[in-house]
Image (cartoon, rainbow, N blue to C red):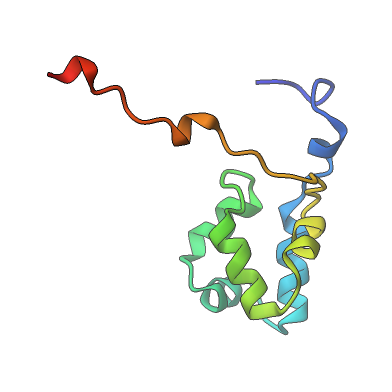
Length: 102
């Protein structure tokens, strides 16, 4: 696991708390429990995101967009994600090797 001096500058700025706090404020919610109800996720999901044990996934980001009308680009910027593009591993598109299975 790399230490902070080895991380790229865009990784250091990542802060999902800013995203969650902004959504709570914009939606006039009381706390994380109210946010989890609004997003229709279990409360531990919000806690794990806050403590950086779980990333903000695409489906959750889309749900945040749906309930807040904030663009996906702006939501990503709020949590410090400044990447221009997302890359999907080429392994996801390769068929499984079935030659050895009979």
